[in-house]
Amino acid sequence: MKLKILITAAIAAYSFHLQAQTVALKPKADLVKLIDKNLKDANAQYKVLMTNVPKDSLPETFQNNRSKSTSAKNWVSGFYPGTMFYLYKGTQEPAMYTAGLEKLPVMEPMKTIDSHDIGFMMYCSFGNANQIKPSAAYKDVLLTSAQSLSKRFNPKVGCTMSWSSKPGEFRVIIDNMMNLELLMWATKVSGDSSYAKIAISHANTTMKNHFRPDYSSYHLVNYNPETGGINKKQTVQGYADSSAWARGQGWGLYGFTMMYRETKDKKYLNQAKNIANFILSHRNLPADKVPYWDFNAPDIPNAYRDASAGAIYASALIELAGYVDAVNAKKYINVAETIIRTLSSDKFKAAPGENGGFILKHSVGHLPKGAMIDVPLTYADYYFVEAMLRYKNLGKK
Ligand code: GLY
Image (cartoon, rainbow, N blue to C red; front, side):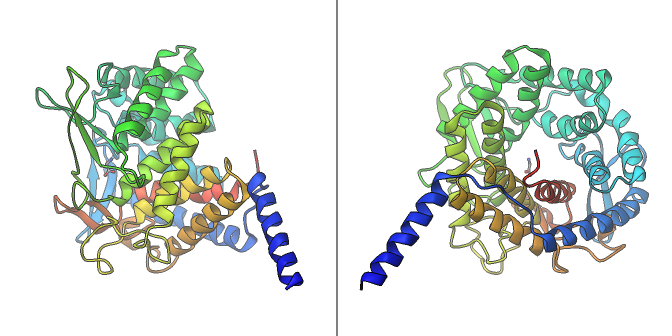
């Protein structure tokens, strides 16, 4: 009996010790080896993908045995050059850098586009290029992009507007959390605090209105632009207004983790931890941790998986693990490791030369619209490569 009490006390003390400290996170050698192989394979795949992309377009998906490219105006345009820059960072292969650079002139006119997605488009492309080789020209493009996004801010609502709205409506989607990184960057480099103020207001308003008590999020909150009041909360890409669309949960997790990095405001950290807890403890999250396209899809376990959501979770969880106590860090890293291993398996990773040159199979773009279901998607590849680079960098500053 005494021994049992002693053991229980020792376990309690050890777990308290773990909870009180952050750990030095270290990548596992076997997973690093797998990641290095994945990056090498990804380079080879992207050489195939390159041959399928017209000069003035950007790849989006591969469907019914055909490559689908898109114009720079599409929200997904920046992911392809961004992935190229990541692959160059990860492998030092010059062909990737050159291919990424070739797309920047196609992307540049988008710096003045009136789109809430401008952060995805420009920060993933020019932002990544600027990290490799900072230049005044890149900085100029990015600052102009931040100005363009700022124009969509409505102080009554406290958010930047998502899709163009009808009179009396101002629609904001959870995805927009991802565009705030461009605004935070713009304040850092320009010294003009107005960008960060917009980002912080958007994050605070989203935190207040987009989330349910269990920290799952609605896809869309429709505001009244004159009063800032809420017209309705609903979904567009998810299964139902009340459901948890898997990628949307990822945009929130990633977005609030990033806002904590940029502001050090603990409320964003708590929000990110709560979102992580919703995802990780959900009964419908499969054991391999790549979610179904919606946590409430009625046909689970036969519902489509969404590799893009899995990749976003992995990348966000690896960053979040660096900001939390040892117990949570271990939990987040374990899940991120599982996701990377799952996405590296034959089930999700394309065989050489197949899949139109995309790295990953099995993502879901817009199921209710019947668009891009169970296909490769450029952003799944982007966040998968990002997650792998972040994992390899664990423990390094
Ligand atoms: N931002 C659009 C999507 O996640 O599909």
